[in-house]
Length: 171
Image (tube, rainbow, N blue to C red; front, top):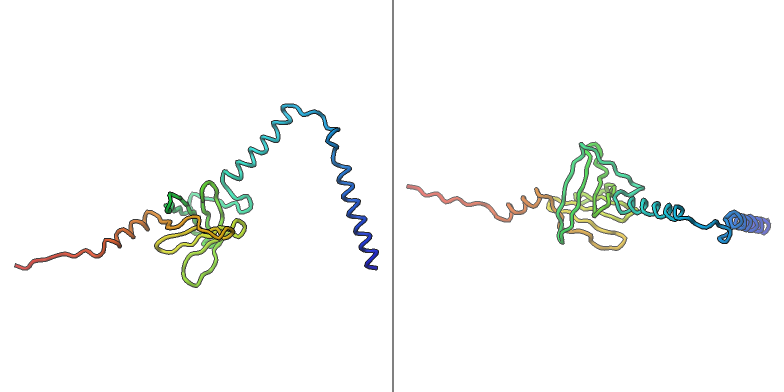
């Protein structure tokens, strides 16, 4: 019985393969391409390249509203990251890294750090009160470190100055 089933599956798969070969036009039978026909594939490539490099992960498609919170981070080596948050959804954030916008999902931690990740792209954002960092889990490396908002930079500068001492003289 299993032998008959295997033979049937083999015949079906071969017939599907042969049918797909017969359905495809032979290269020699094609009509000569005109300039317009050549321009169309290039236009499609340009459009898909714009989607890939221009900005948004097609699968995740984060949406940004005018009432979202925006935080611009300046990182070491001149890297910049922008994070968009929504007060109604604290489980997700949108992160702009270079020219792309990625949607990251919160992952629970025991340390209190804010950790968000996108499993498809491998991006991980870790935020602690003093800084943030962006990691690539696929390549096992840091993409950006020492990322700070202007408020975090100001707080660190004032903390590094230490307490102010005031001398008083009694007369």
